[in-house]
Image (cartoon, rainbow, N blue to C red):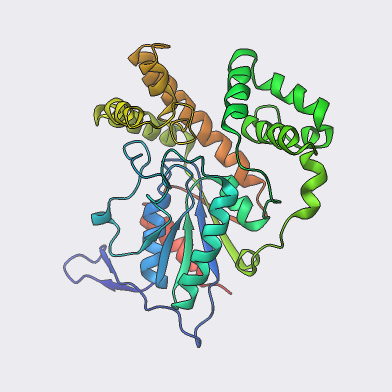
Length: 333
């Protein structure tokens, strides 16, 4: 880590950004900083970018959408410390943007960043995005909005376990590989079977070869103390509602964004839609959102434990000691 020690305060460090990587320096490859929501991934990503001459590539499935702001934790431009950020605010919320779409965009962005002698740093908590980059999906049909709407209603009425039993009938191999609670992937497997007439499990041989950068990826996972993480999630949820989250969702709906879109189906938005549809009161929307996000954080950690080659760090991304530890590990060959 490149630091200057302040003469006024020997315990304070003033950090300087390292220059971009050159051909004589060790090639750091691609870095991915992941972890549960509210764990400080963005703060760590910016710090790593400053030291390694990097640029941030968003890997959060909600931050890709323009107009979706309050509950997304997008870093304001003024707080990005002049670090370029890519794949943020570039997709209409009317579009159901997929992990496969992101992986293609991310691959092109990684190549562009590297051609300019910079270090690509993926930052975000959407595990499926990372999986799509490391193990690209087979070509699949575009989402059928009507079919997805019918499956969503079926899941809401009869539960995720019912969808899993349905998948067992039409694609038993995929069902055996997926947990019932992983309903987004279960639902997608059903959609592929219905739309193509062929089981997803039979199409996996058509997967593209992973991009070269995915084989050199350094995966950093944040694992903060659970009690403090949940406290942060609860407080952040309260701030989102106080900041006008309900009004933001009203505006999006008035602009024609479908209530069942991927954008408004995200954590922090789904329960507001239910409130505006009269399905729950505001207090219930806030409490259920807190619970949803805490459960999501737990699922994120479970997901990343299955990712190969992960390097785990205990704490939050804003912590200077953790930042130093991460930079030290990245400096190792």
